Image (cartoon, rainbow, N blue to C red):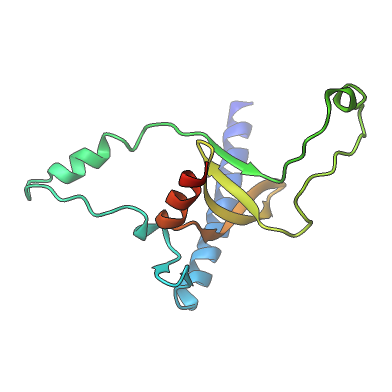
Length: 146
């Protein structure tokens, strides 16, 4: 039974790999988008280059944090409702959210907005395709507002 499970996981991984490769080809075909007027919309600009003494020290510094787990949340929308309405919820109840259908979904890391994206389905599993990365200056602006 574990062989079937492993084979099923391998097929799912292949589907995701194919979807990611297709996305990569599409992004290579078009010129890099500029968001906020000054920053290329790609993750490489989010982190400054680490400088070491030329002995690979910078690589060791970044390696120390690569395995730190963070909480990634994809948010469809929000709403505020009184407790009395929550107690009346049953199977099949519908809760109206503040987001409109077709609107980009927010991607948060540890509660901080880092990107927006759209839902994709690959092999009956949901995923999110990032459509816009929030610039570091915009993240700082949002933090200062709270």
